[in-house]
Image 1 (cartoon, one colour):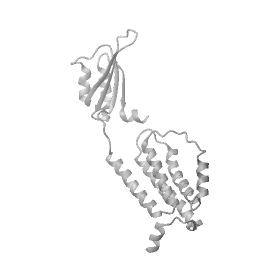
Image 2 (cartoon, helix red, strand yellow):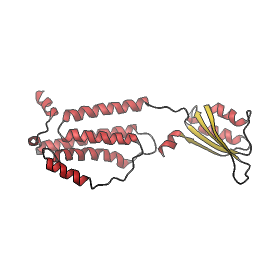
Image 3 (cartoon, rainbow, N blue to C red):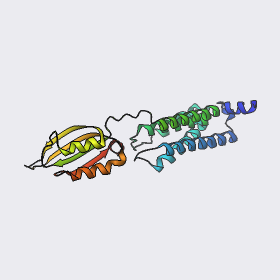
Image 4 (cartoon, rainbow, N blue to C red):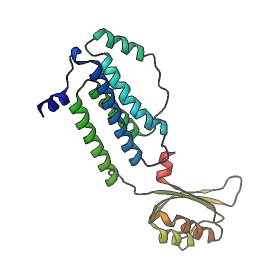
Length: 231
């Protein structure tokens, strides 16, 4: 048991970076990186999923582990490697801040594995995965006073007793008129824009069907907030 604990504690001196320990560091980085990638895969939601990004999480973890093993105990090698890496230009834009957090997780796990701090790498990965799953299951931080954006045009202005507000009351918890703009070039149409809080997204098609039945309503467009933010 003491040998296992000593093994997990690892070390940072140059003499402990043997062929066996380096291979073990790379293997551990691959396993932990794959665990992180699987968690990303199962907890991801939205339209911006990328297979290459998931694979990159594993590669980043292994590469950083290799870097830590390369620069171990050599200041000159570390400076030279930093100079070589500074030539690389990363041009891909990461739109989701959650993806950036996963990249940092992969970097730190790779650093812990490459520096042979196996205990930190394993415990850190377990804790990070537990936090990610907790945030995913609880949907922590979700706050949507309005979750949809409705646009349509009509040949007349909407009055207090118009059928359109009655339809919206049936399918929405609340709704807010954002704009009512007259058409250009003398067009009789009036373009309306509403922020709406949908009661049930499964009834969206039914709501749109009811709006189409209202005389004069045309060019209906409904965009849910999830789709608008992730495109």
